[in-house]
Length: 431
Image (spheres, rainbow, N blue to C red):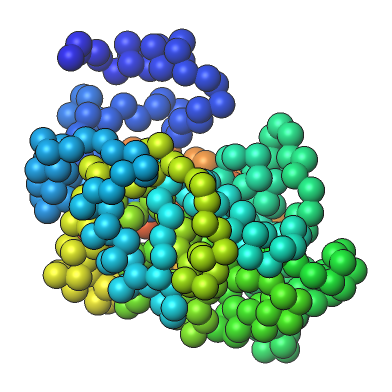
């Protein structure tokens, strides 16, 4: 393989990739390798990774167990279309049936979260014989035409979004409540408003409601405990299915539970997943109750869905989580991270809100805590300052004003401390 220096990589990247393939930082980061919680660029610089490839590398870069499973599998069978059966995909499907909540049992494997959400919606429409889909404001679900239309963030809707029969209901954005309510007196009006949306914007019959458990791209919007119970009751009242999008929150990201929706005491009819499923290998899936799955007998196919190498990686990744009690570690380290982030909020007035769960946190930056004007320029500057300190974090929110933190789930307390020190230094340098 030809060696390139940083300048050559950046030049060729700009020449041969479309400009819409966005990169972070004033000078793009050119990565060479990853190891555990660290990334290394082509110049040998070392970075503590609190972004994990947008919540993907949940078990650490080049995890030994996952790497070995991939190495073993790739020497046996590298590809098998879904027209044929292979051992890793069967093992993975059985494992998902074991660890997912409620009656979820039968899976369909695809390549990405976008495809998983699209497939889940298609299944819901076939089962209910209704077409109307309801998403949440500030939600993000992908870049296919349907999932882009379902996305309710203007920056991610460029180009055509002309899928019909999609409506939107308020998310639980408590810091910027659209009803000007407070958690003490709101009576979860945002969830109850779904009833108004269905009665005024639909025929009264719906196919499904699609919701991220925590809205990652929307800015780590984390609903109160009763939100999904109310959403479920109203969805069922009008004949719809509840589709929970766990693409970013699945597999222990929120601590203590394998999936974030389990914290809310709700069992989805269909659930989607991708990202952290195989710790960096391309795979997505949607899983449903057997009764729902049985309505769609095909024919349907995904050429790369259930690829044996990706499936083997996913099985090994889930086993690693189980064998090393990663759910407990994610919960314990998440509590430590939360406390330290709240201390930063007291120290720096630009931090308007801290929210999240487990090892999934957002810091909403505002120019003024009274007006809550989004500080998106400062958020962009913060990601650069953190990189300069040796820390990689993300940027999200409908105005790109929320710092997004999601370290590997096997992170240690010492590494949490190091990351917070870097974040603190970056805030101190912010002008």
